[in-house]
Image 1 (cartoon, rainbow, N blue to C red):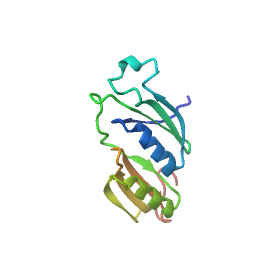
Image 2 (image 1 turned 135 degrees about the vertical axis):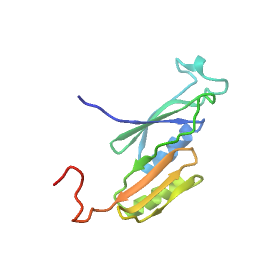
Image 3 (image 1 turned 120 degrees about the horizontal axis):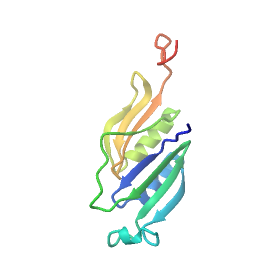
Image 4 (image 1 turned 180 degrees about the vertical axis):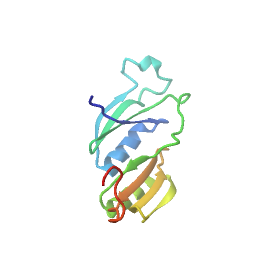
Length: 148
């Protein structure tokens, strides 16, 4: 069986703006962006929703992030999870964290921990929760799960 896992995000009318920020900050590429207006589902959209995003996809590394603007009566602020990003370098972790924190809320300040060169968590200005985890090599006396 081949199984791909993708991330799908719901937005409160800011999907296009968020995806443009994520494309720039994460070094991704927006692969598709379909609007409610002109689509076969246009009649299902609330008034004034024609320019909102019905579906968008963003390639980031080997991951696909997809999303849409949901009608206001169905929107729920994301909670109970973080999208975990794993940059290789502390400088990249700092840059990404600062960009996502701009206009957002820092929930865990970016800092060195016993497991990471840099770790922090932030909810961006679009309401999406992120965790940045730039791991460090495990000490010799600690083995990775499933290894000897």
